[in-house]
Image (cartoon, rainbow, N blue to C red; front, side, top):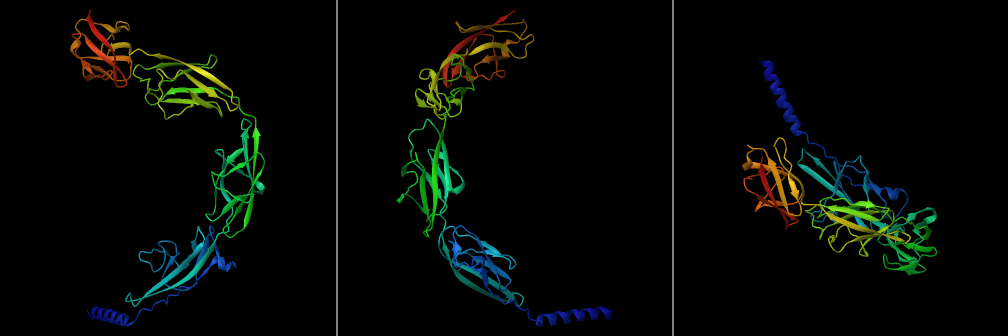
Length: 405
């Protein structure tokens, strides 16, 4: 018992002693060095990263790089927390003067004391960048080669070399000139039949020269239509291309509305596809019923060929039977009279027969009831009239009659 009392007494004594000892605080010191200064540079360079290396002390370190929303002292400003052992990367994309601030802080006396200090340094950023990022002529990207040459190769069908080049530079402060004339991307026209020298001048005034050269190669004579399909508005029909006779044989499903359908076309390398002498568009609806009767393919060398389109519309129904009957009956279809006659065995329950057909894959109704092929049951004790639709328009009507044998 005495041992327990002694242990409690020792514990109480330790608590009292520790409460009388004040926790020491690490004195915060926000000193730092910048790696570009350590390298002997006076200013930072736009587009080039450098590092902040803390050399002081503290428990907590936060860096404010001086960009919008990261300026020390401004309401709502946010910094980047890091450890003293870290070096923090800083990057400025544009020239200017930025107030870079390192904030250090420490706690003491078990959180009752708190001290924060900061150091702010003006970082002057200059922009010496004077390079092209992209250079485009006639919707073709140039090849950046050695000796600051930008190379293009066009087919020899191109004979006019007056182009307005489209370009971008790595600095918003850089400007470019040709023979002393400032260039505007996509607007300033130059004659590229001979090499053109561009001078890219940085915001600091240092120059870099680029030479743009264009060469030519023999134009392709290829002009083959390799794909003809119906897209939106159609039912995936594929045209059979007779290359020898330059004929496209298309069998369209009965339900396809040929008056407004999109085409999926492809042709040989560097060729163009024309429909009624206008450039083909995969996003445009075409009237294959009346307006479009041919497809023209123009080769890169400007030679051309025309494919004639021969369209056949499939019958709305090509086979007709009833699901579940053994043997499966075969309907006799008279396309001219628009009738279907089908024999079933004596004893067959004709009040709930399920029709199954091939042909139209569009909407089909009996009266106002939409029919699902191979699913919808109907009472065939009397003749029924099937209406086949072309798109949303009612088309042919077939009368189906049951003959009990």
